[in-house]
Image (cartoon, rainbow, N blue to C red; front, side, top):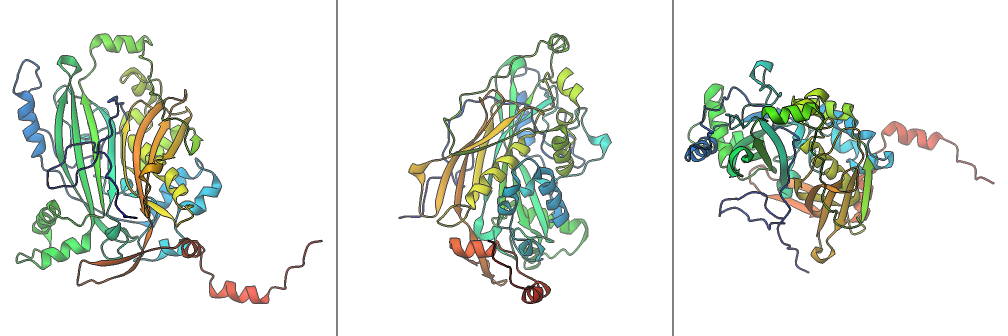
Length: 460
């Protein structure tokens, strides 16, 4: 059977030369959730957002599409990954922990890629702004349109993995290695009219290993070695770099500040009821958990996100009009990836990994309220080495708050990578070998003690 399948739906327009993703039509309802990462010293230029000015949006759109965003560099450190694992640990069954991460020996190997569920990139390459450069709600200025569009919401996103690079020890995801993240605003759209206008921003983030990018610069005629010239060269190289091991799209919506009348209604307790959508039937598998304020605070810390809507209950209630702290958009993504990633390891034909996920946030999820992670395979789309799943999150009343689509592929393992070429040899792992890989190796002392121990007596 052919090992090809349809691409996932697209959440935003992409240039014609890029892969086009099939669109899933989801009712557009968005909620205030998460800010993208903080910026450096960028301040948006003052732009007219007066509805009477017919040209204001085109001027703003042009400025935002050409806005230069900082190139971020980070190191994939085991301690940061451990903190993320510890943050999520108690929200999933303990039996999932061993099956949801790679064997310890893999994580302890300096050059070893980490071939488990994607999503850890969210805690890396987040710009660190000083407090005086944050907006009043704790968010950054990097992607803000400015003017009266002061409220932001995380509307959804997409993550795509280049599996042939992700598992390459020289060009992919590996502990103790430096990575780069190139970010750009690739689309700006206006929806609604008058005071109901919303600006939708699509942000693209490309992650790549530092060494291959630096080597490409060294191989070129211009060879800056340090200082500002190297930083500029790295950014220009990443602009057209086609060897990103992870690419993420973030969809953010900005809304105008609330009117005095709206604020009075909020203070009086007149909050609009949350409307969840009808779920996609009964899932093949599911898991229920209740997010806590500690979970939200720790995830905010890991992603260096100071958005008050996740941290300050009074701000969430009296300014944004929500009944409690909101669960982060990236946190819902992380929960879904961990949830489905655990199931994929148990596939009899051989463990799978998430190759791509696209999702939309349809209604808010609140701290202290139960949510249910759900998944259902699209049997008609099953291929020899690829599968597709509808995934969604239900709120406390059983209605759907998040809807997405996941594409999985058979988990590859790295054989070897030729440093002189960009090719990487990958093979699929049979299920019996994958199970053997998940067993930690015994140390010499353990093997020695094993021989010294007397044989266990049979029970009666």
